[in-house]
Length: 173
Image (cartoon, rainbow, N blue to C red; front, side):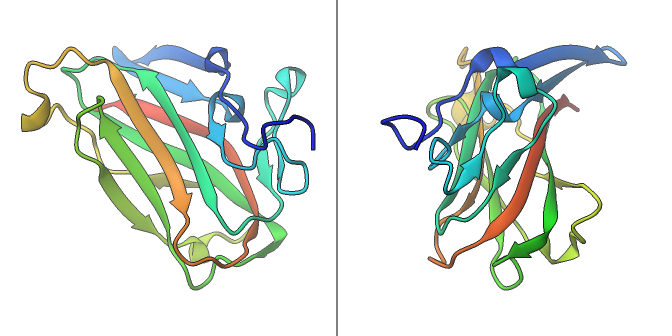
């Protein structure tokens, strides 16, 4: 174990903001994510500061919880997309879905999308896109700029491994 805390805590400096066609785009690297069990090298390989282009690789867990947050304009709508791939020896993904969660602000409503990784062939990277996050009724007039997002599979209790998380893209729509 590389730290006394078994969970990897996000380095917010590992995100970058750009504009494409005048719209906000935020790229969140794996180091900018909170990863449960991410500081324990029996379960995850999380890239260090010098390995910024490398993905976080899940070796094995029964509790998948990867989450992050960014500052985003509360008056705009965003799509959240995880770019992932599976290693050739990946296991535990066939029968159970993973969930993408997106929430606007501290008091916003969670929006979930169920995704199966059975279409990921281990060679190609796939984009797991969550639903668009808008400024809903519960957030009207809110100035809370936090946009929360995550990737989860905590309900089956089954072991899974071989998932690579390359980055998360948050794109204004």
